[in-house]
Length: 228
Image (cartoon, rainbow, N blue to C red):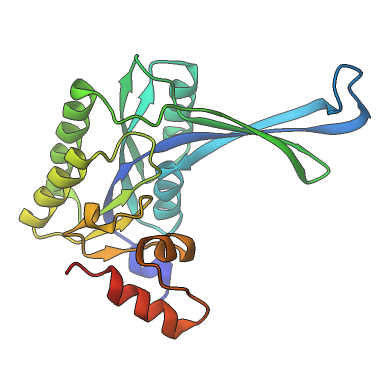
């Protein structure tokens, strides 16, 4: 069975840090007289959902349906992100909590001749406040009964606080549904109770202290990452 066939009809609830990935393309023909930096003559701009939003896009592209719960600011970037997720995106439902006290996480990359010159980030990594946390958990629990599986997509941008992780994992386990967590923090104990944890190589090394150069090392790191 191929990946697309295996996702057909699957409804996945994604909880995590959504962001707006913006790309500004142009040409550089001179240096600035004000500082030793290139001057980018802007030609076009594009934007797409990033972070947990990209996870939702991938689920939809594979033939599944995704319900995305995340946090945005009450700002133009948040509204643009919501529109990008829902316009012409069959298979995605965006249930985004708007918080006027923080900006939408937005990463803007400036590119010339396929070379990235600069990335500018607008973000606030502090955990969501009590009101936003309650709204996130309410949205998550509201969608959980109709979900076949849960993905926790952590980019350390404020959504997956200790409280949110604990309550979301407990609710999902009580519902008898699988949970996949993509971790950001080296303390893997925060994700205790998930079905599958998917660190990349750097995250696994940071969490376990196990150098990884081959499959055997990766297996050893996986054992070290297991709860005691």
